[in-house]
Amino acid sequence: MELAIGIILGCCALGAGIAMIAGIGPGIGEGNAVASACEAIGRQPESKGAVTTTMIMGCAIAETTGLYALVIAILLIFVAPNTFVNVLQKAKELGLF
Amino acid sequence: MKAKKSVGFIILDVFYIVMAILPLAFGLVLDILTTPKSGGGVTIAGARIYYELELFEGTRFFNIIISEAQVNSVLVILTILFACLFLTHGLKEKIELKRQHLAEIIVEKVDALVSENMGRDFSGFPPFIIAIMALSGLSSLLALLGLYPPTSDISIVGGWAILVFALITYYKLKCGPIYYAKGFLQPVFILAPINIIGEFATPVSMAFRHYGNIMSGSVISVLISAFLAWASNLVFGAITSLPILQVGLPAIFSLYFDIFSGCLQAFIFAMLTMLNISTAFDADEYYRRKKKKLEKKLKK
Image 1 (cartoon, rainbow over the protein chains, first blue to last red):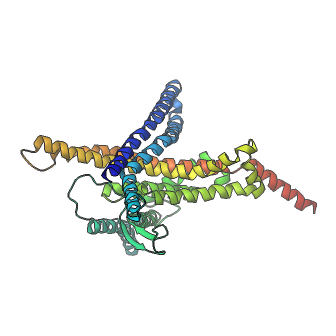
Image 2 (cartoon, rainbow over the protein chains, first blue to last red):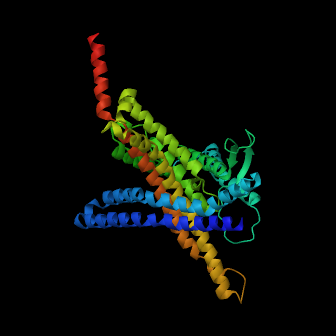
Image 3 (cartoon, each protein chain N blue to C red):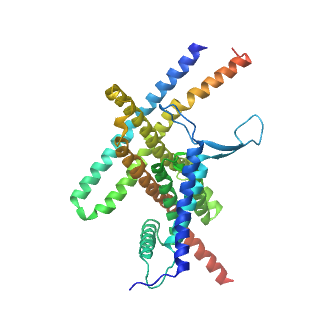
């Protein structure tokens, strides 16, 4: 039983860490977006307002995948271990193994 | 020239201000009364549950739950309501009060934003957009008072997203149900399952974006303050048990995570609402059908 709980906790932590690899994507994407916006403002300083608004919108949308990963990681750390351990204990009470 | 205010006017003014502040004070008192005593350390939990009504035995899925997030969101709604009543109290054609300038600026800015992003077909939308923006922004800013921000609960933000989804579907159905169903078969009929998933992905992504941003901010704030408590214990532990390093530093992070992120997410949520709804409405097709109907009527 202790071994099973240990494996659950360790795998949840590993899974959370692996999920956050998705943070690379939004990082690169938002970097590209901001770089292009800076170029655009440098070329046409008068269009600063419109470019900034569009860039922030784009950044927010690019961020979504990263936030999915974050939500999954937080669920894996704070919610999943309890749930899995409860399921395990219930299974043991029922005599499944 | 300054007009003189009557006594009744001032009494009503004070009443509105008090009623705008009272919900927040009530939330603070409720928060203080119901917070369990903790022994310090890192605690990250969801909204506290005040009341739970069990409908079916054995499962918690159908229970009616009144949680901290819902109570706080109702308090924010009350605050916004009375703040709006205060701002619009004593509107005159010839401006007499300073607050009328503020009210007019807000209305004009939102009108301009909506007409710029949605076009002239949606001239009735500014009140809805500013309502979502104010609700979302003030809910996130509730964290500054130390209250639980309703936007870091998925069920609250999910509710708004479902509302937006209903509006999107309504505007898609404006061109008739057959045209709506045909939209799923674009560009090839094999892609229909993906289109249906994409339809539901819109509210899910809106809800998760808002909720994820606010919640990650609060989680990071808790982690930072826990780290600072540990560090100050390490450095000043021999002198005093007070967490000296916790003074001030978390406020700088809160500047970004609570104020900037909260306001930005409110703006983005409203922006995405506008864009999603306005792209869902096929104006060309709608006016073509309207014209056809009119011609049929004229022929008769």
